[in-house]
Length: 578
Image 1 (cartoon, rainbow, N blue to C red):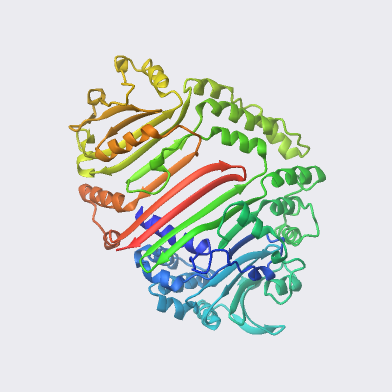
Image 2: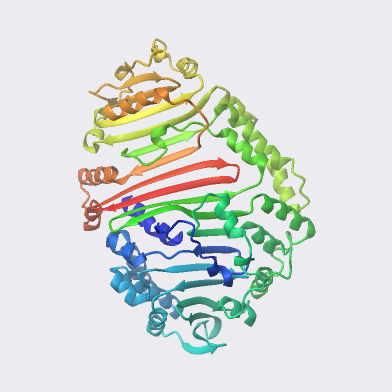
């Protein structure tokens, strides 16, 4: 788990563009990088400020760089018969894995310097990757060597003053496309020359010709940053409006639509999208996409040192559909304070939901789709099928939950050797807290007792005093330590252990309010040693990679919520080298 978690830090830092808190301010955005990006790009991945990647690379141990995973994949593929194109890709992956051994080797392989900037986007459907490197020639030489080893043909040429290396990708003697690596100053551009693009598209991709309307001349990037409280150092988005218009050919003259048409023609699938390429579907799909215009991801904060990394990334399914968003917001429930950020707890999970609003909100969302006026035949058919689904039974299922607003489970510590035994489970080694929150928790508890006859005589003190409930444990569970049940204000708490007791007491002052939907936190400092101990108990050998992971620290916190701007998922990841 820890390997996957901390590897995610690496991927998140790179894929989100990275972000380094500079003393001069957090809003020094370089939108000039977007001058070569068409405003109708279907997607954008942008690192607007440089990132000290080499320093970051040296902080991470080899076990956290996914080197073994890449090497295992390459080795598995090498054991099969592969064509030269696949071998070319495998060679690139192999060189990438080897380059991760140190910042020095990464520099000598890819030409990256201490500050690194990059962005990716599309010209129509033509993908483009641009990066500012210390020595772009080194990058090109690495790709050339990978091509030579795979017997891929290549040639150096010049397109209007820009040096370009073309790598011929063919199958059975027929050209599929050219992979292009172009160098302009410190910038390297990787793109393709394919049967679906023309020369003007290629010039735009290479930065030779400016797009008719560059993204930098619009306010889209600034608006996304401001609307979703991002820091502006890294931003990625998928434009669902442009995607819908392309699929339905709403604008036949758009580059993405024209390229898609060529792909359909080349694959003998010219009629594949006929069912949605009509005025009715164009309008209906456009209306839906306008309400859900983009999926946006960006950094909110990043702090970095020689042995410490802390990154927060926010992802938003942006929406202006107030009816649906309001219904989702009505479902929001209560999440205890101890689940709202990373902590020293081994594991924390909080689920907030307003039980009294669950059924009405689901009905609202279902009715919004069921009652919409669709003239597009595929959507109308889907709508007709949805009418067979009746959410009414949900009302019966949730009516008994009354004023329930949320539940949470937090494991502060545990000893796996004592927790898991052959005959039964011993809870004495666990420091754990289970909470149930409601507007009227006592009434909800008394109602719940009617479904459990064994608890009929159980009375909770209104003053928050705890009662021991070990005698109510199932036969397969035991505990020599006291297991307590207590009413702490609006919260029913079931806990065992010192930290759990202190946390339960703190709940007395927390008012049940709608503050979120999901919180999840993991502290790998505590959970990894327990997993290693479990491996020892099972007799499984502990690898050197697993042992090395113990020298690293990591925490992750994930939250899911709904706002006026859309559905928001935030993730904060912290790593610390020991």
